[in-house]
Image (cartoon, rainbow, N blue to C red; front, side, top):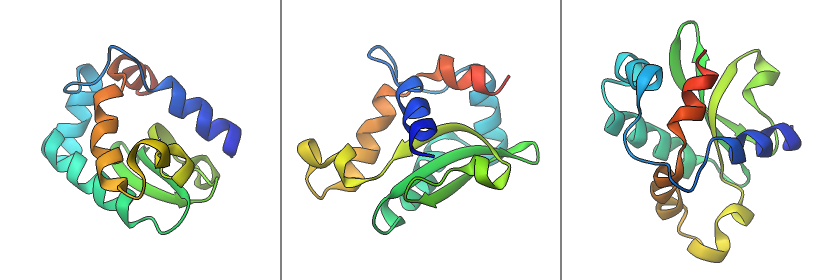
Length: 123
C-alpha cells in the first residue's frame, strides 16, 4: 500500500493549487457533504482522530463521496473503494514544519490540493 498511497498523495498536490473545488469535485462535495467547509471539518476530524500512523481518504462509495481513515499503509483499494484524494498523517509527513500540530498540517494541506487531478479521478 505504501507505494500506491504516496504516489497518489504527490499526484493530488501542486504548487499552484488549492482554493475551492471545481467541476465534478465541487458538485460531488456539495451533494455528499453540503459544502466544502463541512467536508474539511469532517476530514480534519478523521485526520486528527487517526491514532498513530495512517491516512485519510475521500472515496467514491456507492455513487457518493465519503471519508475513510486507514491505519499504517492500508488504503481504500483493499476494501474495494475508489480513492480520489488522500492525506498522509504519518508524523514524518508533517513533523519538520508542524511538530505535533497535526491539525495545522491538515488545514494547510488544502492550499496545495490539485482539483484538476481530483476531477480526473472522478472520471
